[in-house]
Length: 154
Length: 337
Image (cartoon, rainbow over all chains, first blue to last red; front, top):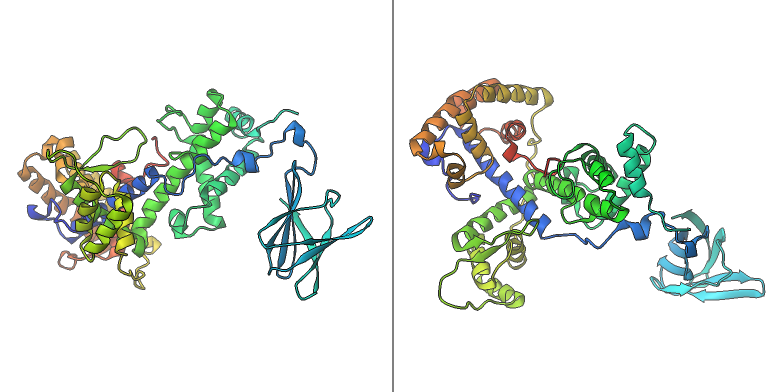
């Protein structure tokens, strides 16, 4: 490939006008662009070949996981708050994905209530009998009460 | 219940009956996988330099079309459209996803590469990057030699052997410091230094290193009014270029193709001995000037005396047609590789 600033090989042959010269310059640049894109393809920029959408996303079901609520994610949200409930074979887990620190969930139970402190980004075990409620009650650090409504499942 | 993967069955059903009901769910699956593969890629890899729903959907449809319709030559396709190859070889879902989406040389990544190559010539900032890359390659040609490239392996350069025994090479951190100490310097000089003191690398890796120690100058956006020709003008250019191309001899077409493909003279002579003598080049250039350039300029209404610097929009419109006529000037992702 010719370099960007090197005199083109046909220039001392009498040339053929400005358009031909401009086409040659554009041709050299496009060849460089193709080569750069090819180089980066082979250098595997942005590539993780081990990633395979099957495990995370394909609608696979194993016998041991064959329940309607397996591998399901539900987002509860209101105002600045967003909490993710993920249900899999290992049980249910809650993660605060948005909102400031210092919040807690108040979960009603047959024998009273349970308070579950949250930390942004941290996973906490959900009570086994939580199920998939239509909403969850969140109390912020200032004592304000929020009702987080269930969004679409993923 | 045994684990099941619906993808192979969807592919087989689609190959058996392309107009049947499996097309829609297969396209939906392709869209889902393409979105997964594309997560780390920036805007530069998508149509019009924008990564959004429209460009992702467009890419998904092109992946589907290539997989369904385009014969691909390399393994495992061996001259068949990918979906047909998957069905005939009874590949499992993981292999189908690997070759279609996730492999380094998958159908999806080849199309991403082609869009990136196009954006490298459209976007002013990316054009500057391509020009710097050309300078790097020119420097590497002077001080290095390309290493034998395994099938599918990255193209790499090594310093020319000097016969002086073992060579001491710097590690990445020491090389970065050495380059930084040499700045400011021309890109080519830094590339030569990086290769001779850092050892084998690809040109893209060396460019990335140079960009790190000596960031490129700020590049301004394209000036206003440089948006390209309107449709009637583009149609006029297309007709003129196709007509002028049809009037060229095979020899003249070969020369013009070499010029617009950015091919160097040595490569042209190796490939086509008709140009081994410089007078042959001179004659062919004159014919190209008379029969091609003159005719195109006349069609777009540019008098010869005003055509020393033809508008960028005209050059791009002519180039667009020539890329269709000259296979070596085309990107390859949708083709038979």
